[in-house]
Amino acid sequence: MEKIVLIISLLSLSLFAFEDTTASSRLVTNCLTCHEKEQIPSSLIYKRYLMKYSTDGRMEEAMNKYLKDPKKEHSIMPAPFFLKFPMKEKISLDDAVLRDNIQTYLEKYSMKKRLMLEE
Amino acid sequence: MFRSEKRSLIRFLIIYLGSTFLLFSIASWLYYISSKHHLLDQQREPIKYEAEHIKSQLRTLHRSNAEKIIYPSHTHIQSAIYDLDKAYIFGTFQTKQTLDINKYDNRLYHIMKVEPYYLGAAYLLLAKDIDFEPIEKLQRNIFLFMLGAGLFFAMLGYFLGKLFVAPMRDSMEKMNRFIQDTTHELNTPISTILTNIEMIETFGKEEANATELKRIEIASKTLSRIYDDLTYLNLNHQYHREINTINMSRLVEERVVYFSAMAEAKLLKTVMYILPDVTLKMDKNDAFRLIDNLLSNAIKYNKKEGTLGVRLTKEFFEVSDTGVGIQKENMHRILQRFQRANNSEGGFGIGLDIVNQVVNSYDFVLHINSKEGKGTEVNIQWKK
Image (cartoon, rainbow over all chains, first blue to last red):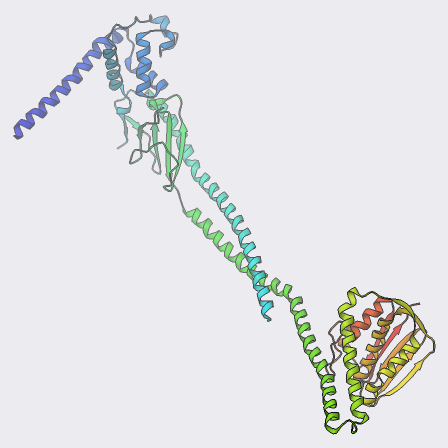
């Protein structure tokens, strides 16, 4: 009996880990590869969003709005940024996938997780 | 202490101390609130300083790319950061604090808004344990002050109360003595009348001699004079005077005759010098009271077989006796109501008060010369 429970637990953990890895690799495929190619640091963009919107919910809405309708006024980046980098095209991802990618992005670069007290 | 005096003193003390206590309590309470706020403000200063410090630290931490971001902590001050939705992000509190400073947990709280939202922090909450020692010291000092002030004002109130009820006590003592004197004064002539009537009834009307009748006459006149004096005193403030020209010479002679029975009873020698047809414009009742009281006093306080002197001229009226006289130290208060020169004789102590009232009403001038053991001269100068 104990063995069955152990096997089920290991399988569940493996599935969650797989799911997480899948979400992460989707983010890399859909977003980060291009960012890296363009040399636009994703953590810097996260910090700019965080500094302006404070909460994950507000950041998600702002990112979603920009990605669906990329305009200077929807962007977090300053106007001179677009002199060097062209305005990106409207994203072709499904809405649910897009939201999933944004949430994974927010989770990946979260600063809250890195906060700790001096030991 | 009289019962009513005690009651008045207690009432005064209750009102006085009650109102003083209320006033001091309000003042002390306001002082306490203001001082407590001041003390707490002083204790809040380091929190505000720490808030500014953390705010600047957040900016530095936000730029950090390190794997671990060390949140600034302080030994005595706890802090936490909250996002725009007031959700807890991170802090040094042992349990997650909600962003609510309306708590009563003996701590000082301070909230600061942060913008831009470094690390996502829109609010910064800081808390510090209140140091109660200076507040307790303040409470102790106020309590000691209230105690000291209470004792001081209790003593002051008692002293003031005694001072305020003193005239009442004086009046009550005077009234008591007046009532005692009145009963005594009335008792003597009434007893004389009753005894002598009894004697006449016992021995038969035929046996009644002149002595008993004389005694009854003297006692009746005494009663009549007491009645007149009391009525005069009682009605004086609302008495309407009828000013007529009075032949004082005739009136003085009449009153000397009226009192002759009393003078004879004391075997007094009456020496009179009355200028005929001395007239004065005054109320007849006032003239009666003036003459009667002076004659009555001169007879009453005279010694047996003494001399009763009566002088009337166009300038003055003078009655003298060879009696007990007035002590020098009592001279200044002899004209006050219910004051008697000495207690050797009965009386209310109202005789000279009535004389003084009449003298003042007509702007006459009163002189009293007296030597203890030798006699008294009362001289009234008519106004010119």
